[in-house]
Image 1 (tube, protein in one colour):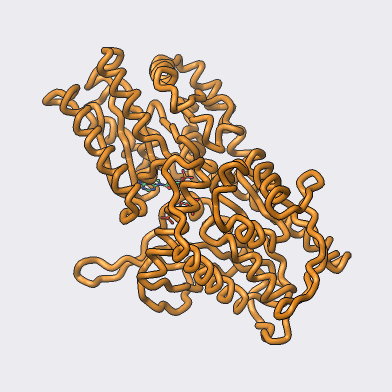
Image 2 (cartoon, rainbow, N blue to C red; image 1 turned 60 degrees about the vertical axis):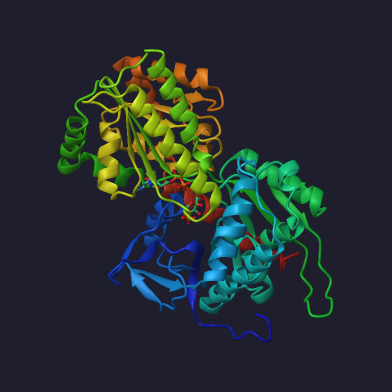
Length: 490
Ligand code: ADP
Ligand code: F6P
């Protein structure tokens, strides 16, 4: 460690992400409860962390509250607090109104504001300081996602003894788009503090290496980026020449856990109840997403409403259940999206519904995992029509739950899952006619073909589950650490 930083006797393994796996929620009466945090990162990392026995550094989801470290399910959690300005500028601003839209191919225009950037820097520093304070000498620190891209570089400055890994859960855009970012070099340098940087898709890793070549001038040899020595300058130590692995590691789920859940009597009973409560339609199409403009919910609704208009499907025969969990509700683009979706759902039900049947059932809330599994079992078709998505774990959860080998997955080519789930009905969500045709094919598909496709997809998911993902990733991290030990970093 650097002279001025005492080496803490801490944890051998530290996970750092913007959110902790649980969110602190205070209701109107001031009662405090904890609930599972939203999103794919937590779904994937929960089982991994349980096995690692580590400390998890993250934000507890509340504002202006200092919370002492605590333990959940054997994992120690170290909360990093955010005040109202940090929440507005670091989380809602730079993370979710600059980086998020930029990395999702500018589906919504990113805002570039210098105050947001300054706050992103200072909050990243707080996370880096917190991680450094609990990491043992030579520990491995695994940093996650776009909110914390500067943390690897900051950690390397603070603690050159650490092995630093980073995983990006969302896409990495082409260098043409990434080049818009006024702080592009600083972001790349922040990430390059890591020994290993993991991406969801082959294309994401290639885009990243190309941005590094162009904006930092560092070449790569295959997946390995080659960084030259940084000489000592006033206030900054010499950093030796080193290598950074930038490679795809497609994330997954605990497939076995989802399968077990879906096999339970209560979930199967609930699935039958759901169908009954919906009036026993012939077919149910399901959508499950955070209410996010990247998910292509509008495009899905448009295709479905045209099928109703054309008389291809009828209210009562086919029901679209859209579960949309609330997300980033104070960010303007999300508010517009919500308004648009809710107006559209109202219009479809007004135009095509009957007294007995609404063609679209729209649920704007989060559900326990049991209810999600029951919905998956009840659904004949799962529609994943993202315009851009790092992976999309919902697609994998659906297949993991379907041990009956029935059900059809309609899957966007622009979701990372499309690289692996080749037997889904792959669609381009911008092509509304193509999507309508895929929905009709899904609704009419024979049981035999459903079985063939579902079996193939389940084979992929059970083989490449989240345990395998973390093993592969951490094996590469260990190899990088070993290389550094042998070469002294050079
Ligand atoms: P993202 O990370 O962008 O939210 P993913 O599809 O990768 O997208 O992961 C979403 C996760 O959140 C999945 O585990 C899914 O089951 C869960 N989820 C989504 N919507 C809901 C909801 N309404 N209630 C409960 N869990 C949900
Ligand atoms: O990678 C997807 C992701 O952005 C995760 O970082 C996060 O867990 C999830 O979506 C939910 O978003 P938020 O933390 O902004 O509610």
